Image 1: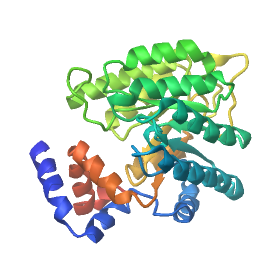
Image 2 (image 1 turned 120 degrees about the horizontal axis):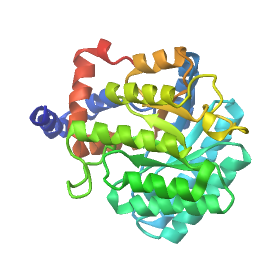
Image 3 (image 1 turned 45 degrees about the vertical axis):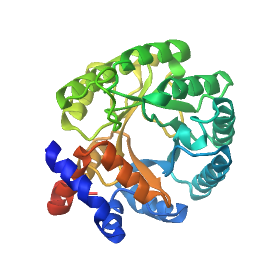
Length: 325
């Protein structure tokens, strides 16, 4: 599978742009906010809510961050105007994290504050290991300013993740809010798990730690072993659809746009059949909706970082019934 995936990645850049676009359109919500909103309207009938991500990351100058700030403010306004059940995700490097952390913190706070005024949650996406600590620090710093509508993503593959869960939940208590995913960045073996089974096992352990810490836990995985483990873990802890979160009695946390202590998240275009099944059973399900003009760069970078994704893309093209949107 590894050789097959790398072979696809090697030749894909030579394919006409429209072919790459044909592949990418399944996994991105369009080039404009208007296109993303239109798609969200269609998918909302499936019982899903959304998190909107403006494509782009790792800017070269702080001046570039202004465009992202303005775009996210437009996203917030559009969520309010449309009445969509949606929040937003931000990549800190798109706001300057690798250039100036102080300025980046100010940029993030501006967006989070506007979101808070409209009761919208903000998720800080996790990028590669260069910014892991800085991203966590930024999230905690914003919370300490009294803005509790912000959480962070942690990656199951990283060795440090159990400690990060403990530190963040110990610092923020009931306001700790995680998205846990396996992680798409191929990190070195000195700091991360590298085999599929190790990553799955580590992600499952992270889910348990988050649930036991009392944190809100967004389970972002398309892997059946992870989803099955999460369902069993939720049931054993008394968590589930239409149940009060037993970890915070007598006063459960009732945040707008949140589930009863947990939710399941899926990338647009991936495992739609599983997502719909979970929604029918009453679980809160969220679709990650990336949009923007950087769709080509986004897709190609993800394929270069993780050639295994190419195998799933190819499978979905050759056997589309296995991976309905």
